[in-house]
Length: 335
Image (cartoon, rainbow, N blue to C red):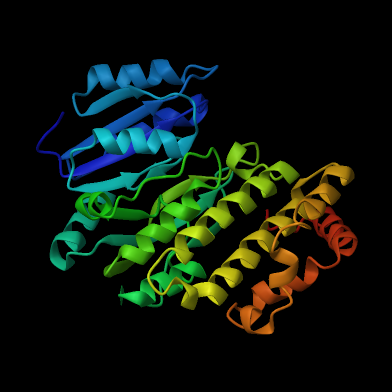
């Protein structure tokens, strides 16, 4: 235990040999030195363990723990339970961070007393090209219930957990842990953070670089993936209904639900090779609430225009598939 650590950086590790050293080096290179790196290794079929062992043996603030191959959420929970820093940062093992991330976030957290901070990020493909980014925010602060409402619609408070710094005592006091699922784990975690938070800040600068890997399990779209997502969204719905006055968020949840599912249906149109599997994706949502929620005009009105267009496009899976095929042929693909 490194009792005087200010930051605990938690890194789940699973089959990421080509990317892992760059990730860990970016943590080692932080200009703010009062950091512990908690590596949670899950049994892999590459040399990820050797890299973890090398860093943990060479650097006293790198600590290696062994997970049970239950997914990133469980690995992060294990790392969190071992953490002793005042602040928590989650870094995926195929990504990397800017050297001034912790120093800049420390200054803001100490000055503002925020429960968490949102900072900018980008997505970089295997050729080193930035394919998408979020570097600027339209606001500097949010307080109270506005945090939850904005987070439900991904309005600059995104569902991902890796573009944030969290106050560890805030997470502990509100019993915020990842659900025991292998995918979609960020959704419920992020909802709990947003609901219990009283104060958040936004930093308009890119500090986090995510490697855009289509072969990553978290990016692989399938009918099973969508079914898992629907189950997790239903779990999130139960969390909201159990809140005091939770019913007032009902339309907000419905908008959040159809926004997420339509996003992944459009990704399916671009990514899935098998026509049969593609159609199964649409079939997999037939028994869910999706088809009911998209009929409610007051729910769709909560979403930006681009999301309403996406929902409309998902009504015509064959046409959507043809359009995606044409766009890919001419070199245009958002995914």
